[in-house]
Amino acid sequence: MNDKNIKLIVASTGGSGSGYLMRLFYHLLSVSGETHWMASDNFFTVMDSEYGFNFANIPFGICTNELTDKLSEVYSINKKNVYHKFYRHDYRDISAAPSSGSVFFDAMIVLPCSMKTLGAIAGGVSSNLIERSADVSLKERRKLILVPRETPYNLIHLENMRLLTLANAVILPASPGFYHHPETLNDIYDFIVDRLFAHVGIEKRAIKAWDEK
Ligand SMILES: Cc1cc2nc3c(=O)[nH]c(=O)nc-3n(C[C@H](O)[C@H](O)[C@H](O)COP(=O)(O)O)c2cc1C
View 1 (cartoon, rainbow, N blue to C red):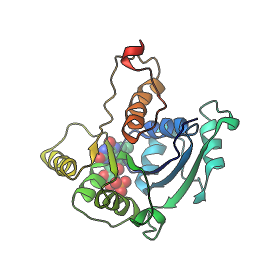
View 2 (view 1 turned 90 degrees about the vertical axis):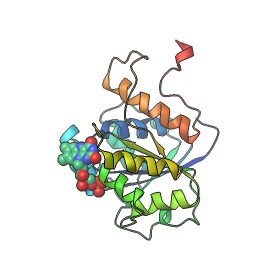
View 3 (view 1 turned 180 degrees about the vertical axis):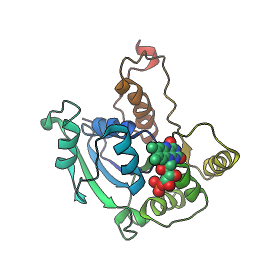
């Protein structure tokens, strides 16, 4: 269990890499705090094509049990060690809590982050709860971490990422390292989860640090 009650927004869009999100949620279960999660329709389309497995039936509102049950289909989870609360918001609901700067969150992670949503955030377009929450995170000077998977990048992607970096967002591409000698896909996903935890201030490690080898 972590010593700090972290309060996160996690938004998922139609980029490839839903496995990273599954591992993020899996590791968050044992971290004390709460996550407010929202996902675009395109996220579910891509997740379905990647896993034949979907989070679409996770209900809106408090959904810790349902999410834990879903994750239990692929990972071994001891429910006694779950210290994290999950809420799901409808990404069309721009009146939900994360859309207001008056509601405090420690950080927002967009994982996976499509280039479409990245471009919308860079353009200040707040047309749904994901884009609005990201806009609020920037205006409130809170940590915003975008995890794109696209490759290669065109000039528009790069310029959007440059602008977002100037606006204080962190671009944390799903570019796993291999120096921790991954043996499974989960080991590869965990590399990115570990970097995310370090950036949002969660002490738990998802992989061993380089100097612990
Ligand atoms: C199987 C599949 C994989 C995709 N992977 C990516 C990707 O890695 N990066 C990306 O920017 N878009 C990707 N897309 C395209 C986005 O889903 C598309 O641009 C969509 O409009 C994004 O909308 P959203 O940001 O509202 O979810 C993919 C689409 C499909 C069907």
